[in-house]
Amino acid sequence: MDYTLAVADTETTIPGGIGVLLVHPSIGETDRIDTDFLKADTDNFLVVSTRTTAREVEQKLEHYDVDESRAEILDTISVERGYSRRSSDHFHYVSAPDDLEGVVDRVESFLASHAGKRRISVDSLTELAYYADIDGVYDATEEMLDLLAEHDAVGLFHLSREVHDDDEIARFRERFNVVIDLRDDGSVSVELPEA
Image (cartoon, rainbow, N blue to C red):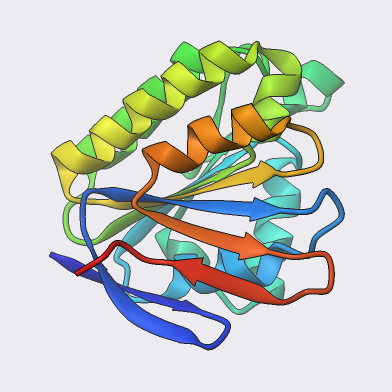
């Protein structure tokens, strides 16, 4: 099954089962790219939020006019920050921000329990690596990409270019079929697989 990908001046389709890497500056405005990815041509989506709480993700979706009824949110930081956890069928939590196994399990559970077109957004791999180690995050990314392939879904994975060295960025880039580069000046380029 194919999925719409509309980013900046690029509008195309990508096949299900693949991941998209969003490489961005630390202070880059990624919300528009993220929400455009989530709201296009999808039945259900999961936001894995490592930087903001579930409530803040909800506010972002509302601000960008994304259909929240299709959303599930995995909040990885509320426990760490001592925030209360809101009970909801659409909110999920892990025991700690470095619980990579818990993150992968929730992605698998989401994909297995929904039919149709499914998208996930992992915001961000960089923040996960802040709590866990980079090799663990790479392995967890591999597992999530395998799950996308198994379930014919697509995912967007955020990575900050200013935090990681060139070798780390290259290692992640090589694993993804599509790479979106958001530059410091706000310009965007999209690398698509060769036909």
